[in-house]
Image (tube, rainbow, N blue to C red; front, side, top):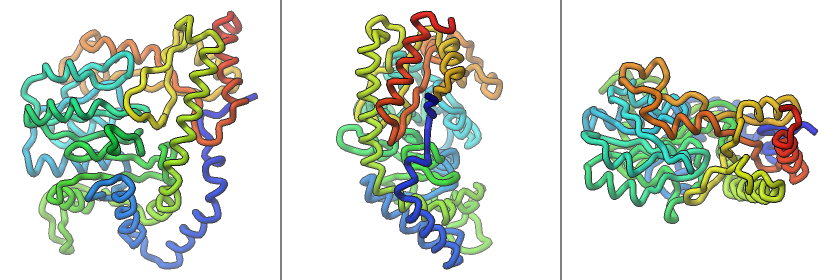
Length: 374
């Protein structure tokens, strides 16, 4: 049977009536830009995450942009370290805010920023850890290193809404955190949306200005150049309906991951090392369930032919891309990122995915390694 990578209709079905009512209320009230739902969502999200300040913005990319713009105004620019094994927005926003990206390789077992390598990098002003696929970088160690070196830390928590490190939510442990509410995320809208969190009131005020063309509130008066980065009122209304359900959805994702672990073990794929889940770090919320697979590309083609949803994150490390060639990296400079780009495969994972569907996924994978379609 076909199995989708993600089925938002299953997630939304129990909430569809409330989501429709929320959208209708926005239309009836007629306040579409930075209206009451944006204000309320910011307060509710801040409380849910356990942070003093949360600022709604237009998407996850703009969350990073707003945070970096605010930091450039208060702390200046310079070299900022991050991982090349991520979506381009992470490094793109570093560069467009006037900083110089510095790529640091990842741990091949987790896909997360290699903190041993990071600690050896000189002359940084900041670091952007990516909480990849729903799991956190070791924030205790990273914050210790950062305090010793005087770095600021912006957590890219686009994929880890609700994950915890040491009892605290991802995105709330550094100088600032950034989130994406792209529809596929653990908390997703019905379009784009994002959020910036911080415990620094000055930084929060600058982020609010950054989302409104650098204005602090007085119409047609602007303190710095930025852009239009506002969270849409309609998205905020939908996100308010969905926010109370995230914890339960994340627990479902963990249950799906645990079933995959058992099924892969029972299939013999895991003991033979043909399919190996990335090692877990911290309290994982499984935005993606990602494995390292022998013959990944041929396996992906086999799954495609059999109607099994899958995705490759990320096939091209950032340090090899044309926009970053000016930095002078060679592909072989970051070998773990190159290895993972050839091996990682994301399997279907979402609330409502059935055991029968997971058995179909693993069964099709086992059939491939047994010789079917090879």
